[in-house]
Image (tube, rainbow over the protein chains, first blue to last red):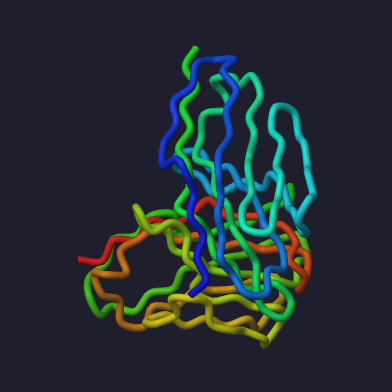
Length: 111
Length: 113
């Protein structure tokens, strides 16, 4: 059965304290891996797409990496405004149109 | 402004009373999808559509119907809602059939009593 897990479930950091979030997946026919950010009461907001092992993407304080079985979201010197739930999702199917989301990591960055 | 809109944003209803949640996008996207989000379970895909008149089941389609008669609209229909369909629902759209990033609507919080 296809599955996406994320760890830790929740993470509390001090401002400036770098860390990584993990997304592990078992899926047949992976077409892409996505990271989203979700603020309370809002819809998820797209961050990154990774398509193949070894690929890396960066945006401000965030960097996403992908291996054959997991992805990491590295947060460098986080700020309080980075506090949110971070969701990982994989796409599968003939055209990658079917998505499976992980349960998310709830990140709190304290000033 | 490019966006996905959903209506209503909040809905309280009773078991068995048919309801429709509308979703509309103004980005000329081919792909649209519906999800439900429940605590501890994350986002689960209900239905998706790769184009007008083309729809397919996601992982949790039971109890839901969809239609795609126009490119911009993708309504979610609950013909006989039950309490286990109480959830937060999100509509999303993306550029095309390949796995592009999705743009999500603001969500509809549904309570079925």
